Length: 283
Image 1 (cartoon, rainbow, N blue to C red):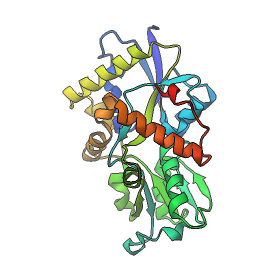
Image 2: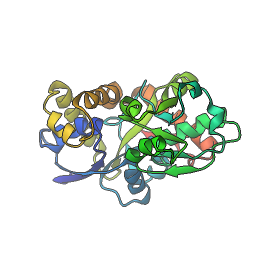
Image 3: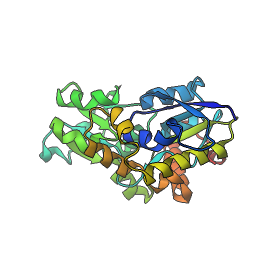
């Protein structure tokens, strides 16, 4: 194994929490970790075009374009329950169930190769008569202001927006995670850690798990690092974010985790949203 490895992950609290120990040389025997912080849409693109580093955090929705070069790791990612993306509007609470109002409307999404986007499209196929109008891709941090200011009719948001959207005067039209769990009984597959196939992926997984154990055993150790990369979040929101997205699935996907990933990608392939994959490549 090389003396150094390169990784790209987001500045979100769950990623910086999980990788803090490894990024700071606190994982015995692990190579130095060189970190690039990047939005999920960027890392999805790097995985798809083959120009990415040895390790990447991507959306599960981007896996079909990456599995020929990268292997899905069984740890380090974000998958769980009660942690799905939200579809937000500026309309008042009285419009909370008016999904038909989305017909032909403009909806902002953080990436067209994101789990959030797949869940949104699968939900809309069932729930929005006439279909959505225009899909507009924009950086995650611009979506809520755009909905608030009326530039966009609705916005699909992830991560910390779950805790902050009311401060923008926005309302939740649907919790797509709750819809997915009710519809399938499975957890929500959000973000995956992938490693180039020529690496010793068992060793990489071991280093990630050691880094995660260090974070759980020493919850204050990563605080400064987490907050320095989540500058717009209060310490309490950052903690809530970590508590929600870093869980048992982060340590090991397990059978229900793999089942959720397969269900998402199979459904999406059935709708023509992603290429079909060989499920054997997921392990």
